[in-house]
Length: 70
Image 1 (cartoon, rainbow, N blue to C red):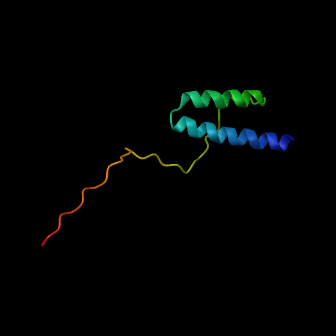
Image 2 (spheres, rainbow, N blue to C red):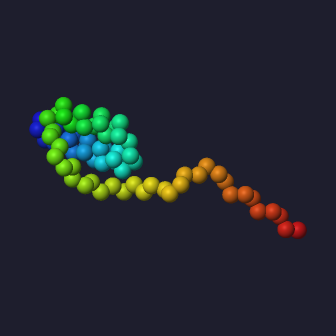
Image 3 (cartoon, rainbow, N blue to C red):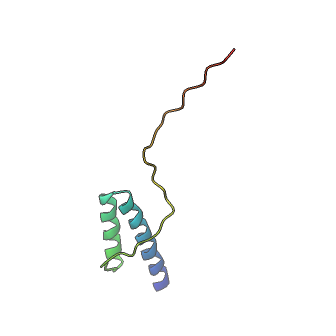
């Protein structure tokens, strides 16, 4: 039972770190509340390394087609 709770707390901490990186304070607050319900007191959250890379700018534009030479 305690092992399952530790896994859930660990998963929530990882999720929280992702929301902090993406600057989503509403989601961070929701995860903090869920952690508090599990009895986890957060002093300083450990840095969790994730493999996500944020692009500098998202674009939904195709490159223009090259003209035929003939």
